[in-house]
Image (cartoon, rainbow, N blue to C red; front, side):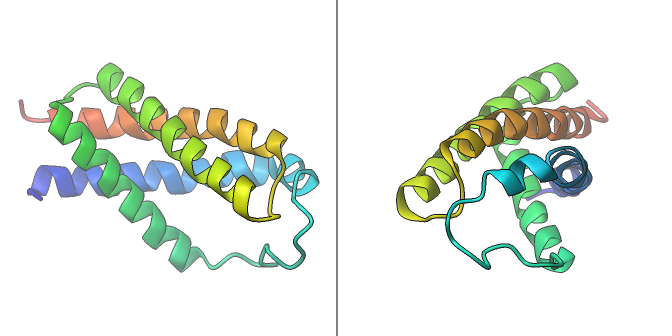
Length: 135
């Protein structure tokens, strides 16, 4: 991973972290809570932001790596590819969890696909911009 990809990874992670907090906690926290499955104690009372940050850094790395492989170096291309990747990941994870655990409902799995597409699209736009810097 070169320096440009590393910087793009961190920039994407920041967008995912901050955007995730705004979308999932501030805007959709009530909807998410209303669509929890029958499992109890699955959500922590206070999230551990260190581990969330580690996960978002990995997600930013995935996004920067994939966009780098695609040769994406602009905001529009990054947004489109990021939204597609985010939606696919949300479908894969959300529906596997829906089929194996009691932590959410079908409604939340579908909402999460849309929210993930928006969030990853925004992160992809930033990553695409960062990958195109200096070109």
